Structure formats: structure tokens, C-alpha cells
Length: 45
Image (cartoon, rainbow, N blue to C red; front, side, top):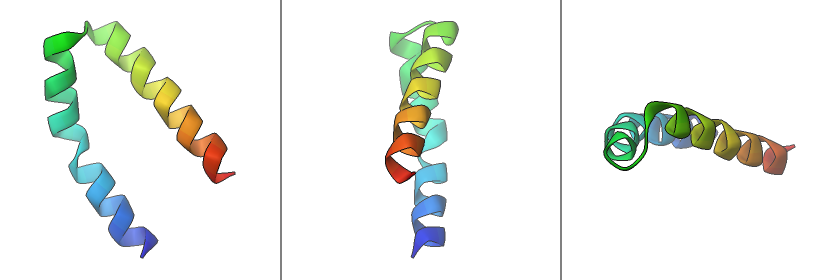
């Protein structure tokens, strides 16, 4: 179950990056992705 969720989440990263670069600058996008990853990791822990 978790492996399937990981595959689905990873498959959405490229479209999300392409969409995000249209709205944000590259450094803003990197900062936003790292904050979101930290929030998800904190929730899992």
C-alpha cells in the first residue's frame, strides 16, 4: 500500500514542478517544496 502511494506521489512531482515554475521563481519553488516535505515528514513521525 505504501509503495503504491509512493509511486503515485513521485509520478506527480514533474507536473507539479512544471506548473509551479509558471507561477513562482525557481528558488521560491524549492523553498516551498522543502517546507511541504518537512510538514509531511513531521506528520508521519
